[in-house]
Amino acid sequence: MKILVNPDKKIWKKELARPVQKTKDIEKIVKPIMKKVKRQGDKALRKFAFEYDHVEIDSIMVDPVDIKNSGKQVDKALKDAIKTAKSNIEKFHKLQESPPLSTEIMKGVTCMRRSVAIQKVGLYVPGGTAPLFSTVLMLGIPAKLAGCEEIILCTPPDQKGQVHPAILYAAKLIGITKVIKAGGAQAIAALAYGTETVPRVDKIFGPGNQYVTAAKQLAAKKGVAIDMPAGPSEVLVYADETAIPAFVAADLLSQAEHGADSQVILVCPSEKIVDNIIVEVNAQLEHLPRQKTARKALENSVAVVIDDMDIALELINEYAPEHLIINIKEEDKAVKGIINAGSVFIGNFTPESAGDYASGTNHTLPTNGYARSYSGVSLDSFVKKITYQKITEEGLRGLGPVIEVMAENEQLMAHKQAVSIRLNYLDKEKK
Image (cartoon, rainbow, N blue to C red; front, top):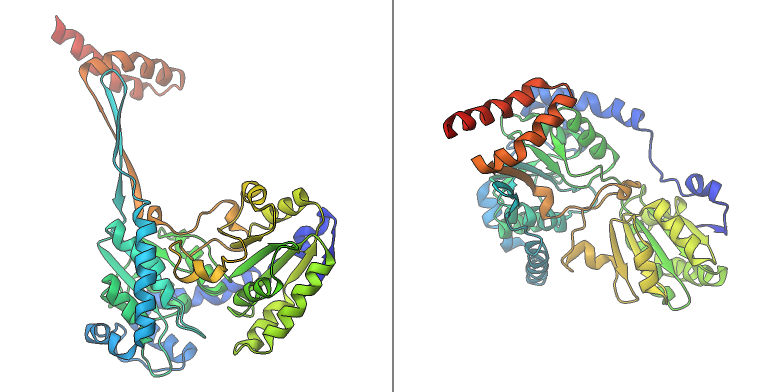
């Protein structure tokens, strides 16, 4: 890892830049894929499965029988773990439900709001080098709790043309019955445009690589909502002398193993702490099965020494990490100072892996600095908030003149007339 000591603020952005390709370069690759899926539908999905996943698939949709029987192929320990994670995620997301709101703003004027589920949603679950069955839980559970009528899950098949049984088992537990064998930008295109097999959805969810992210952003331009532009994973760890170096190293490596385009950042108040952690990183790295991937990610990563806590927090907020681990003595002060982060993990015994799998919070989070303006996926992501208003005769008499004055001053006379015609009617009725 590159080490910076009290770097000038002017170079923060450059030195902490994510290892991402230029959007235009990615879109040049993604746009033709999306156009082919739009024109050719299922045929294009089969073509891209052969080209990118190196597999010939007959049926694009997973047979419901395979979903039903998936548990037979999953180890009992994993099934129990998935059930526990499901329970925790359900508990936390259930608490996010918003009751209908209704209040009389002024005499005779009542305003209301309620949550209504998005009807059709598409969930993208990365497969790639590892089957992310945890993402099925993170997206599927709030979708079900929200009451979405149709849930379509897309995930790339393996080289035998099958979807990993753990993914199917998680889908079965939640009650998802439509699973599509498609990955990458082509899966996003299928959800955005629809094919003979894949229904068009209203909103697309799920993490992915830079191509998936670009596809989602292009889909958003075509009128399909997306959860957020979530790309390669990242973590920033803020650690001082109270942090256990082995724990910090493990957290850094847990993100580095995600992919070669992942990034990990370490912020410490002294070089000695950084050196101790790097020693642990190198030692643990030797035993990782995904060592090659993690090494590549570490090449994109940086350790920053900042001895002033206020400046350290400023740098963290500027970076706006997807995952932020705060492992310092003054953790309360640090937590209060954070305004830009996807999800925060506090203390020596709170690994980032907990949020990835089973603590109950959601792991679909904004990356690449989008935590400045986006939240992670929650129950709210799957609903719309519709407002209502009802005005009585008495209410219109009180509020109407206010509307008339405002409309007239904006020179929108039809707006004024919509009120005036009613007030005149009430005056005639009164006589």
